[in-house]
Image (cartoon, rainbow, N blue to C red; front, side, top):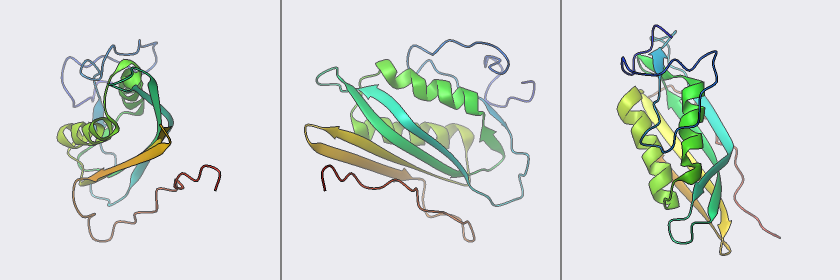
Length: 156
């Protein structure tokens, strides 16, 4: 990816096997120029099998993450995002910290026009926890569909 804009030391992810980063801090997110920089549009990534570890028990926590963003000058390269999200498999973090941290890192590095993340965490101890974060109000005229994840119903 010669047009990567994240930094000059980014690994070349495309077309080769890439090991899962050992931690979110070690994960490198690649960004490429937005092919439609003047257009107002929304990009959605869904990670229905996201996993991290409970910082108290060390047990796995599972979530369905939905990331929506209106690109600015760059877009996130999807394979690097997949590797970044996968790096949380051995990461201890509370649901709130993990969800908001993912959104903040992407917003700080990619500088989208707007970004939101929904973390729909599966119940642990009988309580589902849903965490939402966004950079602000969506730009006027941006179509923002519902994230499409139903609230947890259990037996209901």
